[in-house]
Image (tube, rainbow, N blue to C red; front, side, top):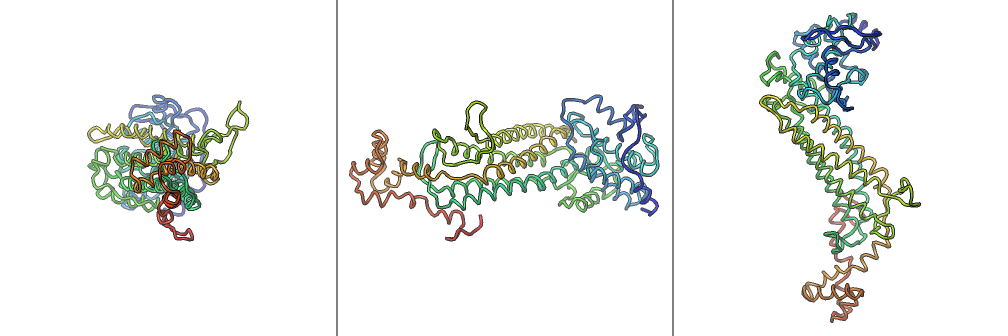
Length: 493
C-alpha cells in the first residue's frame, strides 16, 4: 500500500458521525439502517427477523472473522485480484474488528440462519463501510469497497463461518480454558504430594473400604483431569483444518486455484495457530464433526471435574455430623438463617457449570447430526455452546483453584479416627485366616460396637499376629512410588 494511502487511513477515526438513518441496499431492495452504525441492509433485516431472546452471537466469532477477512484480502492482493488500496483499507478495518474496536457493530443473535450467512454479511458490511470511509467514500454506497465483491472475494458463508468457528474455538480453548485447567491440575497435584503419606480410609459404594493415602486419592483426581485434558487437546487437532476455499458446496466455485491452501497458510501466520486447509471440503462443510469432538472433549473435562467437586464436598461435609476429612476455606456465610454455617459453594458452582456443559454438549451432538447434504445448518448454536462451555469451564477451574483447592486443609484427627475405627482393615487378615472367619470378625465388631482388634482376639487371632498384619501404613502400597516421587518427595506426575 502506498504511503499516501497509509496516511489517509490513519487520519480517519472510528465513528460514522451520523444521526437518524441512511439507506442501505441488498438484493431485496433498500433498507433504512441507523446512521451511527457501519452495518448494512442484511444485518438490519436479520435484526428485524431474528431478535430472539438475549443470545447474541459471541464476539469471539467476529474477532475470528476479522482474521478471515484480513487473510483473504492479503491473499487476493498478492495474487493481483484486489488492488492494494482496497486491500489496505480492508486489512485496516479487519484489524479493528480483531482488536474489538468495532464490537458494537455486531448486534446479531445466535438464532439466525443456520449457515451463519447473516453474521458473515454483518462482517462484510461493517468492514466494507469502514474501509470505504477510510478511503474517503460515503457509507451505504458500497464504493469504493463492496461487501460482496471485495470483502467476500473468493469466499462463501458456507466456508468462512466454519473457518471462523474453528479459529474462535482454538483461541478460547488454548488461551483461556486450558491454562486455567492446567493451574487447577497443578494445585490438586501439589496437595497429593503434600499428603502422600497421610493414611485414610477408602470408600466404595459410599461405604468403608480398605485404606489408601490422601495423596493417592488426590493423585487420582489430578490424573483424571490430566487424561481429560489430553483427550480435549487431541480433539483440537480436528479443528485445525479449515473449510475456507470450498465456497458454497465444497467445489471452490468462484475461488481461484489454491485459494484454500493460501488462505489457511496466511491465517496460520496471522493467528499463530497450527492451521491448514481441509483436504476434503465436502466433509468440512457438510459436517461439523470436529466441533462435536471438541464439545465432547469439554464434556469429558466436565465429567471429571464434577466427580472431583462432589468428592470434595462429601469429604468436607459436617463439621460435626458429616465426614469432615477436608476443611474447605470459608469464603462467605452459608445461610441467611443459620448463624455460623459455611457451605462448599465453589464445589456447588462447579457441579452446576459441569451440568451446563454436559447439557450444551448434548445439544451440540444433536446439532452436529443435522448436517443435510452439503451443509450443516446448525452452526450458530454449536459455536455458541462450545465457546460458552469452554469459557465457563475455564473460569470455574480458576475459581475452584483460587478459592478452594489452594486453601483446603486436612482434619487430621478425623482422618486418623476413621482409620482407627474402620472394620474393613480386616481384609488384611483374610489371606491368613480365611474370608469367612475374617467376615465373622467384622460382623462381630460391628454388632457389638467393639474394636476390630477386640473382636479378632475374641475369635482366636493372637495380639501379635493382629498387630503385625493389620497395620494401616503397610496396607496402602508404596504411595510415593504411585505418585512417582522419591523419598524426598520430588518427582513428576
